[in-house]
Length: 65
Image 1 (cartoon, rainbow, N blue to C red):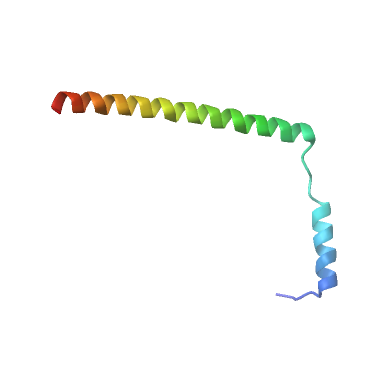
Image 2: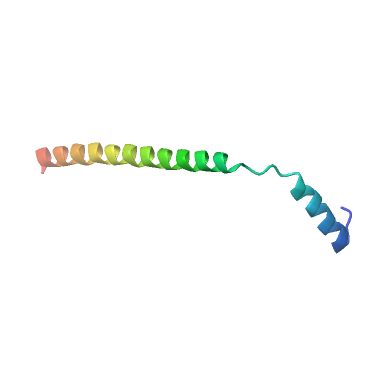
């Protein structure tokens, strides 16, 4: 692998950073909102699953306990 001097490295980094397509403010906002919605739905789902499992186990333990 070829080695480059620090000046060439910095130039290459700058040229690669220039190629990056940064998201718009609207894209960031919509993505953030979607993350919060999905996190909320996931939390609700697992809370319901936990409730069902807990209720089932309490019922089973109540019968045999």
